[in-house]
Length: 381
Image (cartoon, rainbow, N blue to C red; front, side, top):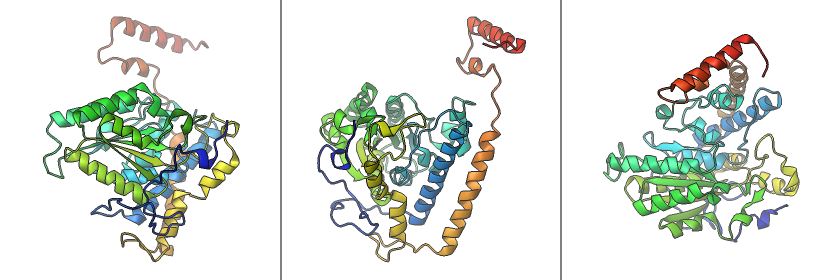
């Protein structure tokens, strides 16, 4: 099954944007798009996009070298993720899928911790409360219910709608287009809409749920689904980091103020296979990839930075010193990822038993003793 770029979207509804496809200010899709009071720091966003992409690239190489069991690439989705991440406040909580590597980076999580998860040396990797960034969720849509439950807690704690920007909180939860067909996601929409919860659902519509194109799941844009649950939906160009930032910031501000949930559909494209175990050549064509490669979000922001025009009046021209320093930072990150991944220690054999229940039962303790004895014996399974 193949799906051409023209057929990837069920309708011709134009997503909101601030940047044209060549990086210049756009005047066609940005009508009514809220420009935030605190514009996006373009150099910081460009840096995060570049370094997050290098993280992704190095992880793929490590998997190919046998250092990781699997890796889900985010190539092409950096604009959506960095734009959304920069809209967050420190007190906001994020619930990711398993592909939000750029958001993880922006929230200050050591990327080596993510490598540990896919290396199999941990079932978690980082402390969610420290970074306000929950653990990766492999089960499709499950994180939406986690996010809604957390948002219910925020309301009960009186941390929304007070008017204090330093204490009011919101939740940002990421989903893929495939997760929109899951029951958990629709249940989360029901609860969020009915209780006007401070949660923003950020759908990266990368066109493919593994090998299933979005048009098989729905005949309408994802953003339109929000209306059926009683809250707002907005469709944005997912390869436009400025637009993603503006839309997400507005949605989070509304959520913190007690205005309820929003569904953001960021229209983008997954340019690599679903994971390193997938062969996307079986279900889509090289022409599709070439089409979206020309819309690359990193190159688009680079072109904007080098243009004298700027829709928000803040685009700094990237000096050679900035680019050289960034290139050096890239190489340093790549080296640290390689050494950090290979240096990850294997967990003790009793680890799964210790972290299964808060208070182990006698049966679980007996199973642990039996397992440790088996490991000590040196027998093969």
